[in-house]
Image (cartoon, rainbow, N blue to C red; front, side, top):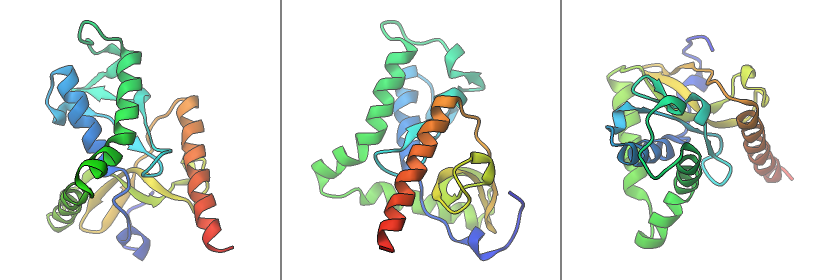
Length: 184
């Protein structure tokens, strides 16, 4: 997506930023590395159809599939456990505290700081999907974008395997159905 100052670049949602942050923190703890060295994204709908793009996950520049996994666990076990944990974490916090306001307020502060400081950080914010994602150009879902003083300065195309592409299409369909139900 080209850099632009169109209004649609200035309007975006928090997408799956919080889910991605939770995943990076928990996965870093499990692998005994700093969360800043975990490069993995949760994309799609912020909700039940969100998913982790494991095929593009890196730990400090090393593909997750090649990273040494702690003894007593397999990569498949970790992927299943953290995919579920990430999806349910917000619900668990809500059940304990009655809200998740601190997490989302932290995300909003990060996004505002990134814009004000023109930091060009990458966040999976809610934005219209680039046509290369293959889910239509009108669906809005959490996808990695470079955020700076112009809002969404560029949407990045995250590599996905065939299974992850199906999950993205399912998530987009769920969002389209919800949107269409508002107009019926």
